Length: 438
Image (cartoon, rainbow, N blue to C red; front, side, top):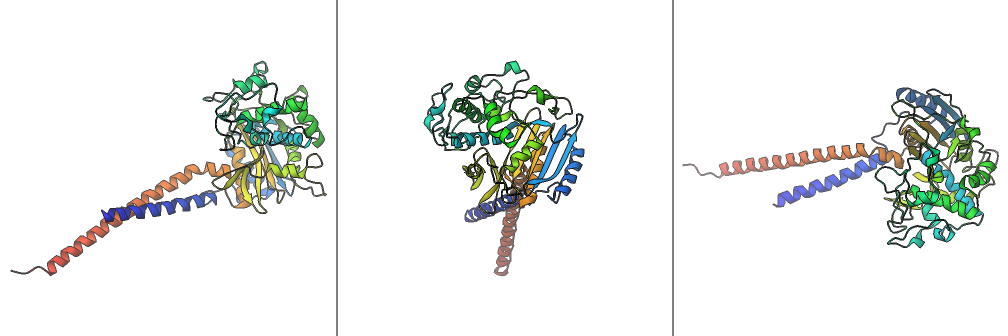
């Protein structure tokens, strides 16, 4: 019995060490082979072009930023020509841009990050819950730590006439993802857990309208887009921009419909690569002495956006409307946001605040190409796997762990059998040596 316990203890010890090694290896990309070996803008673009030829994508626009300026652009389209002024719908990348608008509202003195959001709302209030709704603040809505459990995800509407009012959508979104109630409510203790909430950004959309006295789209145009000369950006597509809208595709190469949303702040930004290059530059110093924020929003507000407001397993994962992908020097993080929706729209932006380097990818027709390219860019930039690449590698990591555990089990079992046979043989020899002859 003691021998069995000893072997079991040995197995557990080696298994734990193996899991730690595999986790460390996954975080440092030991099992990951990026699609190219260099993040040099020219070489990276060549490799991306080769990758596009191997898998379906309907429309594609990419910019590699180097030192805060455009290093290389790449475009592709299955049909209608795409260029830097082509307009894409960017899904949840909208949250990143919307968060800048909310921070602008803070600087205007209209709201405070740590005031309960209910104090600003008249048109709609969170329903009663088992928790303290007064703990739902602007800061916690921006960082997905407000305790909202909607999990939205909006599917949108094919017909504009079907779009709900903000209040109706917050009560029960009829375009919620399958399996979700569509109700925006406090379901867990605020600030006890990070839980992604599209509904939280729809609530912020209402907040902007209530406190500014303008529609959300008008507020963003007047206070963010126009001052930055982002002339192709809007949350509600108008006729003057429709002719520049990209085509939508399903992943099987067929044409897909264009969807409209109530949830403008969460998922309905229309913008171009050229405008997102301007937006990117908002967060980095210009080569000609331009200040971070470009005089439109304070550097302090933009810095606060990329400071961690929630950590998982010791790793920073989210700021105020920003995904934090990997830690880098000077207590900074590569940050940005991704967007993903159905029919396939996948968008990504990554910004290195230390160098001004980064990547912007917009595409339709492929479920995750933009995210994979952006995550590989981060890997080449830092030598580490970012939060989304780590998620994509979980399957590989699990497989390696299981194979290792099987091998460890076989070795320990084999060692046990070998030692038992060895001991049996030794006992037989000892018995023969002491056997008395007739």
